[in-house]
Length: 90
Image (cartoon, rainbow, N blue to C red; front, side, top):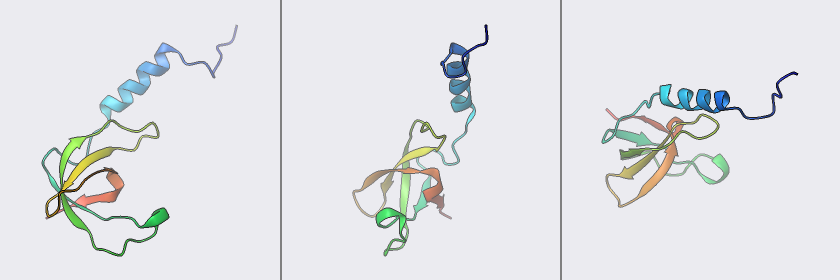
């Protein structure tokens, strides 16, 4: 009997967990980063990037994107963003 490729098996679940454990975060807790906000529907934002601090490394999304909770240095704003929206602040 052929295995059904559409059924989840424990091996598939285990390998998905291992992939998440092996993925590394580019930014560390309490690191300062630059966040470029996006306008509506991904359009360019009208304001420039702001400096944020990484306050939490969030679980990796099902599509493999790494997420972070960040807090603004100049305002009392927190948001969750994907890694591709951040850059290093020097």
